[in-house]
Amino acid sequence: MYLSLGEITQYESDIRAEFEALLNNRWFSARRNSKQWAFLRHCFQLLIKDITTEFECSKNQATQYKFEINDRLLRYYLSPTTPVKFVFSLVHQNITSSFEDSEENYPYCNGYSLRVSYNQIKFDELQQRRFLIPKTIAEAIDAEFAVYQKVPLLNFSQLKEVFDENSSAYKVIYNKAHKRKSQRWTLQNPFNPSTKRLINIKIKKFESEIAEVRTKEYWLVMWWSESTQQYEYIYSEENHQTYILTWKKDKWVVLENERQQPKTSVRYRQSKTNRER
Image 1: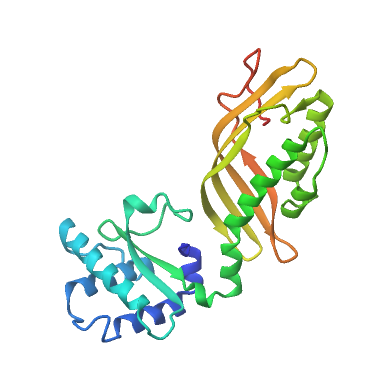
Image 2: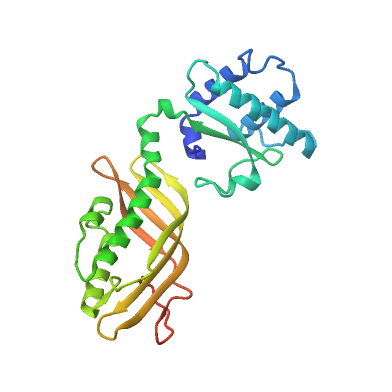
């Protein structure tokens, strides 16, 4: 997981020191005047806003520099050297758009961005919290789905583990389960194909006590009516959702979950757009 621009600013002095130690290591950059090391330094200066211009070289030359640099970086980090706090790598702009922590204003140098990771052996508390975010989102999705699966039973124990019980996100799911019970709708009929899947996750904002996370998810929720003995509502969507998390009692919990209005979900017998799963 790569550091955001905000985190790079926060750790800037340490990152600068790590980068200089890297380039001053004789094994890593024995030929210090080589173009690839000048390119790497240029990428770093662009990242920390010391400069704003690109490196003077062709597209093919930049590609060659990238492969040479990453190859040397990989061998350096795998060698028995002094443990490092931050890890550097060059990544092409066509790949970075899919990163969970991609940022629109992240700087690129000749089509490449210099990414910085925290060494997993030397995490500080803030980074430990950040690495718990994807796990929390996955657990939140599982907990919501588990509530629907249990209807007509109303069991919110799993939901309480990952949602703030006083939050709007919790109350929406709580009320929905009660509504489905009163309607005598269920997912427990034989061969009900309801499912869910987390497709992608991006951390849009991260601070020590709060985080904003954007996800792409697929949900298929087919509500069966015990009264009419047929599917009354089908929610089939691949959508984007925004979670607001807060750090509470040594873990992340969900405060809000904003989701897109369905485009295709319909009642079984009559088309009707509806926000509900």
